Amino acid sequence: MNYYIGIDIGTSSTKSVVFDEKGVALFDSTYEYDLLTPNPGWAEQRPNDWFNATINTLKDIAKKYPIIKGIGLSGQMHGLVLLDKNDNVLRNSIIWCDNRAFKEKEEIESVIGKNRIKEITGNEAMAPFTLAKLLWVKNNEPDIYNKIDKVMLPKDYIRYMLTGEFKTEYSDASGMQMVDIYNKCFSKEILDAFGFKEEWFPTLQESYEISGYLKPIIRNLVGFNSQTFIVGGAGDQAAAAIGSGIINPTDISVVLGSSGVVFNPIKKEQINPNLPVQVFMHAMPDTYHIMGVTNGCGLSYKWYKENLCDYEIEKARIENKPIYEVLNDEASNSKPGANGLLYLPYLNGERTPHNDPYATGVFIGIRQSTTKNDFTRAILEGVSYSLRDCYEMLDKKKYNVYVSGGGAKGQLWREIIASNLKTPLYRIEQSEGGALGVAILAMVAAGDYPSIEEACKAIIRVKDKTNPNLLDYEIYDMQYETFKKCYESLKDFFKNK
Image (cartoon, rainbow, N blue to C red; front, side):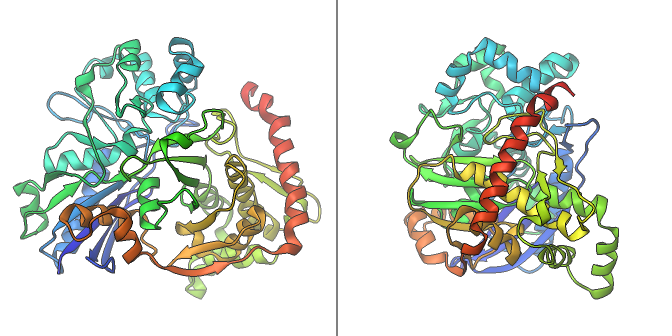
């Protein structure tokens, strides 16, 4: 029996999961770390925190499973990691939800051209993408910029630390906005336009290809007794899609994580450059995916919990319940429409469909009759309306919609989303998402399965189905139209505040 590990380097924690070759999760370990917000709209993390968390999870695993065949890496996308010539980290990583580079977004549009940047990378210029962040460092931190020797994404920093290999793979790299996604290479046009050196960037490979082996010093440190390889892996959304079996154009994944994502695999010839969705490369060879992103999905619920829910936190402690279970129960005591209360979940700006780094979170419609239950439900509904924004950008055809991520554990949230999208939601039995997805890539690399398709067919199973509630359609349609109008009426205020 071969054993594999999927490592998911997330926003709040790193989780490593051991799987057998049938995709059964056997053991997992998680270590959390801080999210740093030194200024409004900024979001940073210490790369060494990811590395220490990774090492600690592997140490926990090695106590029970010291012989591991292969490892896959999944990681938060768009983050910027900078190393000098001695491999020292030059500054904290500027991560995916950071929106400081709004001026650099405009500079990219001016220098490259608004249409041209989309022709090369598949996407409009965006402040959260790695290109804008690197340009921000050039414009604002010249002492750091002049020391750059390597530019990496979060998971590829972990790869480099574990193997010494300076590599990335297409799915994650295509989210840097420096890759020509059609020719599968870093764009010389973009790099030259801003004076970025080509040797700063890692070698590109396929997600299922072996990129290297654990260094002996790492094997000894964590306690493995095997020559363990690491595959290319994937950006977190492509990894979660593989881990949910989202590999066909008729499939859609709705991921309720820190961000919310609507994800649809497509072939190159299906790319519609006129849609305001993001286009990246999938972890499947010769496959792309389009996706809409709600920046403040789980982040909204987490913010709400940490700042406005002391009573609920204490209640969860006394009753020995998960805090989100208590909050979901609270939300269920408010009727659909949250008594007219609306929440715009733009805590860190918004990506789809607005591409607006200036947007902020807003509650609208507070009345004398508004209760705490209404606020809780409004959070869930507001995120659902934003996900509906993403969903309605896709071609109007019949899809099989699969839901995953931590938020998918809540039955109420699944019901709200199903009723907004007017389609059933299927939940996958396996709950490991990205970790399972990249472990599957390692299984394919080892030859346990002939292809990613065959591996998903053998491993992925549906757990349950959540049907939409026909009685709620009219309420949610009305609230959704108001939700859209609220953003339109506030967008100038957001920019000028």
